[in-house]
Length: 161
Image (cartoon, rainbow, N blue to C red; front, side, top):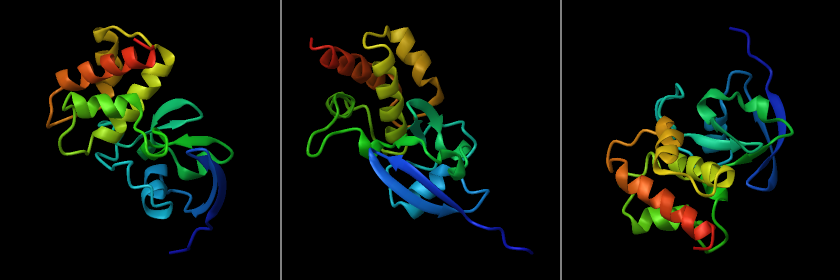
């Protein structure tokens, strides 16, 4: 079998310039976890169905298991590690803790990323809008009511209420 040439990628991850080499077929979730050691992004289904690997790519919510790593050349990636500030949780992280909206932790990073994307787009979503927005994030442990309440509460905090 003929070996394929690796691709050099320059990108920004969580606000920091990063460079890496990747195989042409390698997906972003693999590079984040195994090359850049950002293990917050979880590998769930590897088919884009569970949302555990969700990241922001130039501000757009994507499943990193469906994005080729080479496609992030020159783009900005935000993972769950880039959500809070140094020593301070993002309101969605804090509210998920307060509302017990997490258990095993597999879905949590994707839910945090998706929730942040929603609240940046719509700081005052209805419960229906939150449920619709998070429909691509599967959770087997907590059920969804605690997660939905946490997102709504985080939105209120972010709006200063």
